[in-house]
Length: 186
Image (cartoon, rainbow, N blue to C red; front, side):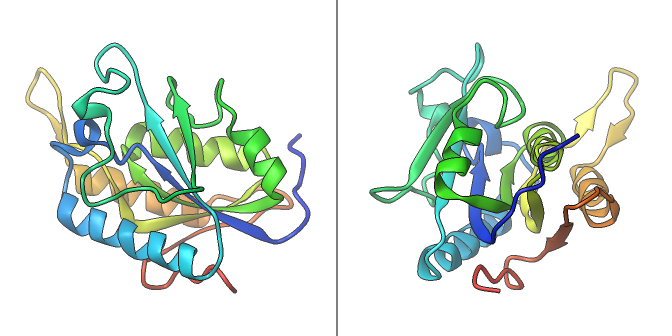
């Protein structure tokens, strides 16, 4: 059973908004604009922004593809977490960092919806955090199978948005909101 977090501190968690992850993703300019809206709101309302960056054999740490997309950047004092697994919680310092900050609520954005965003969202809920997925600030690529079957990126995004709105966890809340609707003060 998850530890239910007490308090009301909120963090914006931006996961894998990296050049190599976003290169072929769906609707990147709009998604990046919406992430920027959320980042600016978090900063202006005094909430921490944590940047998570993935690395593996294909996305080499420090390489041009590993970098955040040029439109997004951290500012001095913002936390960066390096990860090697889909969930931002697995074998990282994220949970300890959130505890030090007194965080109980995570607002989530980034990429890729069906991998790292999904795994991080479920990881947050499993660990007792309240979660808001910014429904218009995460993206992924269309999946095409060898037989020609496709799962469109927009459908993958919609599926996670529906799940995060309607799942039910004891003692926790989870929902979705647009970047414009996000209010870190409320």
